[in-house]
Length: 373
Image (tube, rainbow, N blue to C red):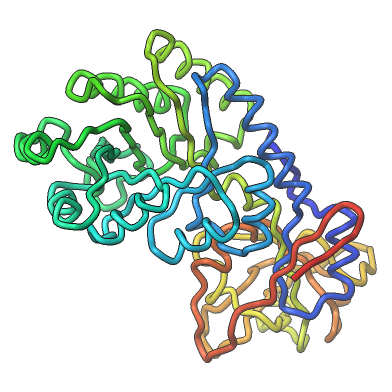
């Protein structure tokens, strides 16, 4: 059981009939449902807080909605930090290998929790002004089995907690580590969640002033089965039962992916030599679907009947620009609209721009049918 369904609600379907295409529609009610479910599932974690990973989506109305739900932000660049601040998100956690010491110092001065990614970044921060007296530390941890596609067993991000140079720099500068932070791909299983919590607890011995543990994100695979996710949080809560710490989580894709829909219009319809139908949409799968594989979940108009497999091609000249390989469509015609699911995370924030077609318009929708761009 997932948190939210992948089929669009009536508010999204109403908007899909009239919105200019291509368009990304975000269902704010579905996002609210997800946030409430996450809070319910993690209620046993000590003083837990949710931070939305802005790498998934930076659309200001969506961020303002999350801020209104009391969700903070996880940022990894100055642009993301500005977007989170402008939206009123609080707290804001900042970490990333590309951030300079000046970036981190400025963010800390404006109230962000900054977590250093390594020794050289710490040196850079200590040269900046003003130097925060309290920081967090991102730790390098083993990667999950499914994420070891490059052959590396440990994440390339984070610092080694026992590094003597790290401790020397902290001691000489009088800077305290008050947060520990891990993130290394998908959590995936309850056992993986427990192991991450255990790794953080072990590091508390080296950093006794720590009061916050950030378990990172990568929760989408875990939530394919909500019961399994609840089991994971139960194991983490049991592991942290005697630790006087706060727990932070950084869901990004999980929060918004299934709450977003891409609406496209068909520009032409043909047939391929292999027997499949072929339709060209006014958007590009190559440009938009970097980390996802959305599928067609609605048509406007819906002519019913048994569908025939169609390849939905994108608007670019790239041969492999495909939005769907075998969408079941009945009598598609130029001007028809298709609605793709799973487009609320990374679709806009990671889009490419082959041929300069530009981004789709973005709108938020609510159950009462209200829309805003």
